[in-house]
Amino acid sequence: MSVRNLWVFACVVTVASLAVLQPVSAQTPSPPVNAAGFLVDSGEGEPIYAVVSFSEESVSAIELIESSGLPVVSVSFGGLGKAVCSIAATGCDVSECQQRVCQTGDPDSPFWQFWRLSDDGIWSMAQLGASQSDVVDGSIDAWIWTGSEPSLPPLDWPELQAQTGAPEVAGSASMKSGPRSYLSNVSDDADNRSWRDQTATGAVLVVIIGVGAWILVRQRALHQARR
Amino acid sequence: MGRYGGDTPALDPRSWLAWGGAMTVPLLTGRHPIVLLELLFIVIVVRTVCLSGTSTGGWSWLVRIAIVAVPLGVFFNVMTVRAGTHVMATIPDSVPLISGPLTWNAAAYGIISGATIVTLVMVGTTVAAALNWSSLMRILPSRASSIAVAGSVALSFLPQLAHSWQDIREAQAARGHRWRGASDIVPVVVPLLAGGLDRAMTTAEALESRGFGSLGHDGQSRRRDSGLVAMLLTTLVVGLYLFATGQAMWALSALLLAALMLGMLVVFSRHIPHRRPTAYRESHWTRSDTVVTIVSVLAIAVTTIFLQVQPEMLRYDPYPYLVMPLTNPLLVGSLGLLMTPAVIATMRSIPEPMSESENRV
Image 1 (cartoon, chains in turn cyan, orange):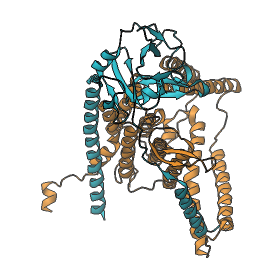
Image 2 (cartoon, each protein chain N blue to C red):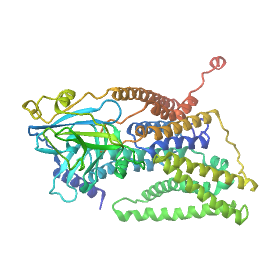
Image 3 (tube, each protein chain N blue to C red):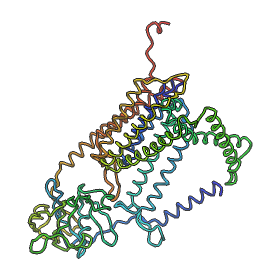
Image 4 (cartoon, each protein chain N blue to C red):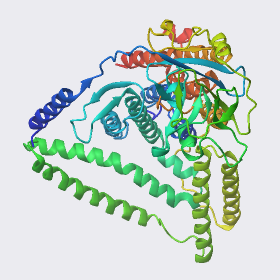
């Protein structure tokens, strides 16, 4: 095959590939009618409270937390469902999660425990994984990063709404403007520290690029002078 | 004209090896986009300055191949990995085998992987082109001379091949050879193979005439030392692997064991007479070598500490979320010091101001 034929073949393949690709269409969300809440306690700082609205009759607990806007990393275990590796930068990375769901050889090492609040206000560890646990309107769950049994605070809807600033009635008309999540105030310390580090790193990089650019300009000038 | 900075004297091979090691460790232990871009910029500057006025030793084609491989790697990664939350397009289910979402996460991973390979190749080729191999041979102990010779022969294989390829192509083009199809490769490949075999024979004869491979000591101690060297290298590699995977205590144990074996080798080799090759011009350790070595060791130390304490500053995973990577100014700053060889070369290249008497003349 000559070089010209090769180019023609490459062009045909490229055009064919572009033709079969569909651009991602913006999906118009159906109006939400339900809402559920949860708390996330990483063991450091204040726990995070969240209320998330959804349009379906029920969603899985994994879907709920993933749609909350919190940074969540999860891995799939096929038919067993998904496991949560990290929430809001607390937890472990994917490779570690795939081995022991963040646990080490120590049986007391922490992992993300999934707890549910019953109708009579009693917390109990979920019997099913978060992928199989259905969340319906008014459900309240908890995600706790610990290796032992946690002592969870009593929680109800008014408390959740007060913490998150969500509308009074779950699934009310005021929440029908689109799927929304309401989060309690997350501690800004980590964000501030991260911003300081990013800014300082940016300054260091500017210095390095400046020195490198000066060296390159100097080198070019020397070359021209030698000629 | 010197090898280093045009008219400036060369750095000691040990300094270049330390610099190469410091540049390589962050690239091999993690793929952090900001660290990666910083190291890529540094190696471009050092390469431009320190290899100016000299041939890059036939390594440039390897860098070009690595750069060409980046878009291919990105394409394959996007087509084969469908993880991630940032979808760029979706291949409909009617297309067999490749249907599904194409994600920006996969593209980002492909770009980072490709850039890592390009940077590693550039670091390796820069060190290979800047190193004075004969000086390195003289520095190494006589016990390691056979490994060093084999290594230098292996490293010079690709640049020699590139030079031969270029020469043969030009010679055949002068005879009217043109590329029209796959069959036209024969007039180039056959002389290339013949030339390669010829060079191999010449190298073998030259090595044999210089006594390469002669038994310097008795067979029993040689077997013992060979076994020890094999165990030492195995333990060292295992230790480095454990270190890279974050298992610091096991890594430390393995590296201590390797150090113990190295000590035993040194003790055993004391009775062997050291044959140091002679040279017309001895290389000397200069202040520049000290500075480059210190900043390289510092960069390795800081990288090592961050790898154990804050590995997220050196590692980045675009799956499942494509977020801004975390950075640390101390790490970025210490790696920035690896531009020192270029700074030294530039300072050396600045012409000194003329004295008053010279001005009058």
